[in-house]
Length: 236
Image 1 (cartoon, rainbow, N blue to C red):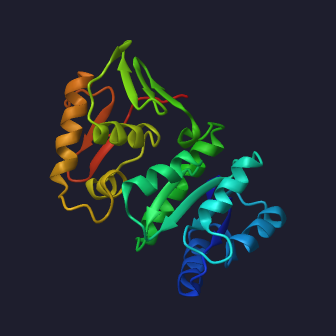
Image 2: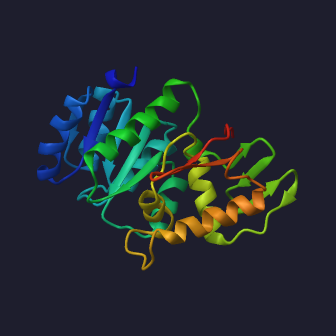
Image 3: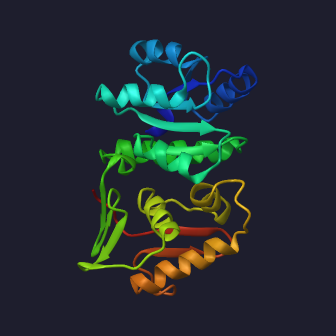
């Protein structure tokens, strides 16, 4: 059960860890705290966490360096990165390096708990993290993350780069309800000068090219007043 999971919280800002650690404990997790990347690596060996919440900007050894160290050593412990850098290219690089998810500061602690539960749920079902795979497959739909191309029944789809990124994010988080704000943050970056209607436009683009009926969807479901969910089963 994910609520019995052990979480290592790594952040050099004590104002964050002093408040977030007790919050996560009240949510049912066992929490250990580290103040920088070097301390985190020591505690990973001792604590053996199920999931690591890892700040990107830290002294001595930053979060992405810790992540790269883990993956190079074939350690695939689930990782959620926290950062104040909201550019979509930063998010994409983090996911390519093996992060399971990515959350911009400041964030709602309840949103973090929702992300933790989603990541742990996939891990406890024995599924490999879709954030780490080079290819995502859902029925007749295939997304090649290296080539940045999507195919439906073998035919390449003419998708804009932003639509590819949106599809990639949704397919790598199947079954999760995603608000327009979350998708805007993840795909466009938190400071991108646009509104949530941009998300609706790209969702409509995806549906049109996927031949997906919004009233009877196979891939992208609309949750009225809340956002969207990728409902197709996804494998690597």
